[in-house]
Amino acid sequence: MSEKENQLENVVEALSRERDELRVKLELAKLEIRDQWEPLEEKWESLEAKLRSVGDTTSEASKDVLAASKLLLGEIGDAYKEIWKQIKS
Image (tube, rainbow, N blue to C red; front, side):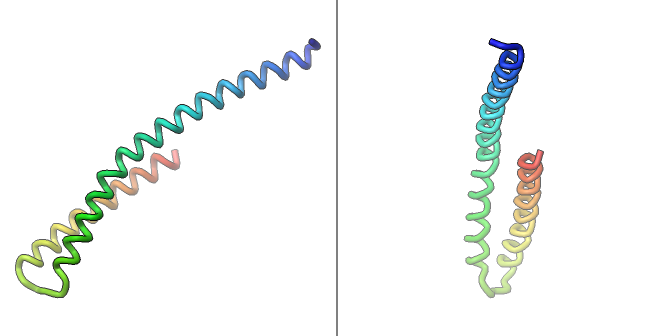
């Protein structure tokens, strides 16, 4: 085998190892992000149900539900931003 062929083979082997490592890291990142995503989906569904129950009423209880919903929206929004940061990095 010539020196050039040997160098090429070394580069291919190094890139192959790097590719395998990246594949593993991507799978782990997917699992980590999925673990963060699933509880957010549950919160989102809960929020939607609460907001549907409020409807157009203006009772004191509805105001409390709306206030709690705003807090939950903020929490979900912050978590979404954090997931975006992780995806982009």
